[in-house]
Structures are given as C-alpha cells and as structure tokens.
Amino acid sequence: MRILFISASRLGDAILGTGLLNTLIERYPGALFTIACGPVAASLYEAVPGLERIIRMRKGPWLAHWRTLLGATLTKNWFMVVDVRGSATAYVLPTLRRHVYRRRDRNAHRVEDMRHILGLDAPAPPRIWLGSQHHDFADTVLGKAGGPADTCPLLTLGPTANWDAKIWPIDRFAELARTLTGPSGVLEGARVAVVGGPGERDMAAGLLKAVPDENLIDLMEAPVLETAAVLARTTLYVGNDSGLMHLAAASGAPTLGLFGPTRDENYAPWGPRCAVARTELSYEQLRADPNYRPSPDSDLMNGLSVATVVDAARDLLAKVEVEE
Image 1 (cartoon, rainbow, N blue to C red):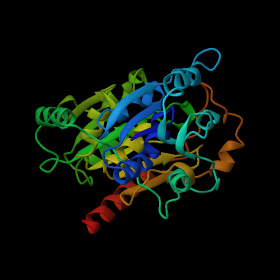
Image 2: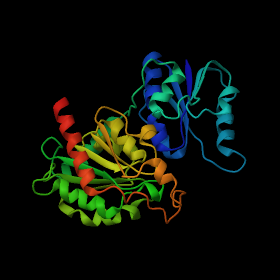
Image 3: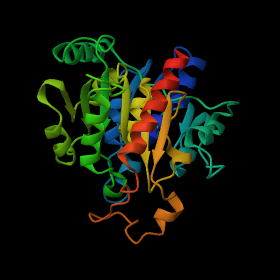
C-alpha cells in the first residue's frame, strides 16, 4: 500500500501538516509513504515511519517543481494521494483515494482548518519524528554545555524569520535573555540556545555576541531534526513567527511566539504549552502601514516591549508548571 503525501514548501507550513501525516501512519500501519515537499522542509521527514521516498520539489522555470512531481509519480498506482497544498496536480494522479486541501475558514488556525482534508472530528496536532542520531546530538550538545536540561534550565531563542517585518529587534532578544536568566529571573542561571536556519547567522549576530560564551549554545544552521531534539528538552522557547517556532511547539517545548504583521489566529504555535505575545497594534492596523510589504526597511515589531514578553513568558511557565 503506497500513499503520496504532498506537503508544503516552507518549513512552518510543512510542520503544521505533520499531524495529518501522523494520522495516516496510525490509520494504515505498514503503508509505504512518499513525501513531496520543498527542499527546505525535506529533512523534516527523514525519520518518518514507513518512509519510502522524499521528492524534493525545487522551483524553477516552467513550473519545474510540479514537473518534477509529475515525473516521479504519474506512472505509479497510488492507494491514496493527500495534498495539503491544494494543487491541481493531485487531481491528475492515478489513485484509489484522493484528499486535497481547500481552505474553509480564513479565521481558523491552519491546523484546525486542515482537519477537513481527512474528515477528522478534531485537529491533528503536529508531530516530529526523531531517530537515535538526533537524540545523540542533543545529548552531546547539552552535555558539553553543562548537563541535561532537568538539572539546568534551557532558554532557546529564535531571533530570525523569512521577512524583516516579523523580526523583533535583536537588542530586545538580548535584553530578554538577560532578564529571564539573570538574578531573580524566572530562568535564573539558564543556558541560552540560539537557533536559526541556513544563511541567517548575520540576523542573530547581535544576540550571539550578547550571551556570555559559557552560557551560549550556538545552534545556528544546525539541521532541522537535530535542532528539534534540543527543543524537546527546552525549558522555554521564545521566537518570531517562523518555521522554527512551529518546530519548537511540535517538539513539545513551552513555546512563546512573537507576532505583529502576521495573523496569530491563523499561525500561532499549536498546542496546550504554547502562547503568543503580540504588538500593541493589531494585524489589521499594521497591514495599513506603508512598510507592510516585504522590504529591507520594514520594521513592524517595535510595538512589542521586552516587559510584555517577560510577563508572557512567566505566565506560560506558570501554566506549564501547574499542568505538570
């Protein structure tokens, strides 16, 4: 039994759809899965049970990514095709069963809205699959940094994003780290991990310099699943609206997402151990700003103070402590 799962190009969107993939894995034990996705998201699926193949859909001239998909799948007979991208391609592939995403409610969270693809009664929470090598990486990194997270708290910060307007000022991330981990801070004495994707080191440079070397765990440009293994042991994650924010939430870390010019009702980190801190101005108000369109000059996160984020972090940790 072979199932084709057509996932998203971006990491965050791909993560939000992993709950559907997990539903299929549980529903069809022994099935073989082919997963089609963008190159950035491909490594997310390396440890998926029953994985047969990952098709990396690279964009290029003349819809090259869709031609790649068709060339790899059109001649196969599929038991099921599930397409979370809602593409026309899914309708031409030979299959016994076909499920294609169509947005139903623009005000709903994406995880909630996607449950309709498989006719689920409840949303399918995102899921990250890890192998022993990923856990070994976390053991090594945290061991070198002073021992397991249960003996020393770990604050992980995600100061990057794919759009400048979504990035909270780096000096505020540095102040946040000092406040949370300093004397009388809610994570006093914690180590600080900094995460970011390929090519994003310059965005995080100011924060990397601000954290004392003896407390810093530099995970910039670390592989996705290795990063997830560390996030699974994180005491608190705070980061911009990005794929890494969703990775933290799906890994089980208490996750505080920072929002401004994007909709938290659609893309907040998903799960009971998650929360949002957003700018004083709403998404609608910020969208009216002439800098709303992506550009190097966009800066729409200044309306979020360090004090607001500190309070939200304390509230989230208190909530998690009560639940545990």
